Length: 258
Image 1 (cartoon, one colour):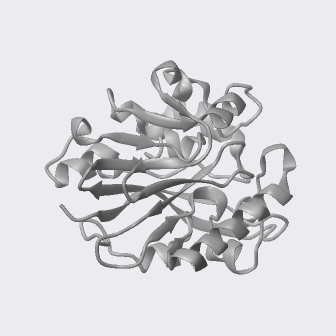
Image 2: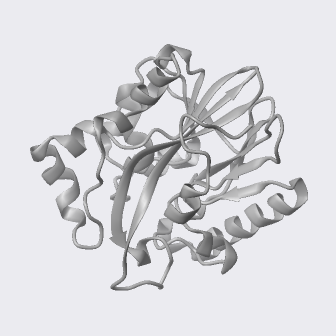
């Protein structure tokens, strides 16, 4: 099996741009994709992130409880049944049992909430990320979405998730944020930035995300520069995580990058 990278649109956000670009975009609202990625390799299948908890989006009471407090800076996410991870897997003839690793780049609700749709999967998370999430100090982490963490695989630092798939430490946006370098069968490698870089603007202008754990803007900028240096040394493409124009330039599911 060649290594293939599928981009999954798991929903959309609408929020004030300053959420993505620190001190830039006050009063300017943007729409952003909520993305997850399926990486098929000869050594197994990996999900990088899993989108939102559909129940919280679709159930009025839960939607009000979890997302109304974020207004007006951040509107509740939009998500359809067909954007749930199992629906994408089913279109490929797969189910949760066919996923070898769920790799969470970080614990914010739009990246980790969909775990409830993937029972029994092996989940990878960074020790620092989980420790910070458990403090209750990050409003983007929902307590119920990390309740099963005792069964997760806890890692410290960078490692090979599978041959040709490497976890890259990019803290700053959150305490233990991780990006991922994916070596493909035919084209250049891809660096999935995660929320270390929401937009192309974060990379080009070296602008930190609007939210930085403990306001560590310098650490977030260091991670952006690390990603750019790694892209130069490996020839990898940098894929920002919440950039609609960039997302539309990618092969649209069920097409893939190989």
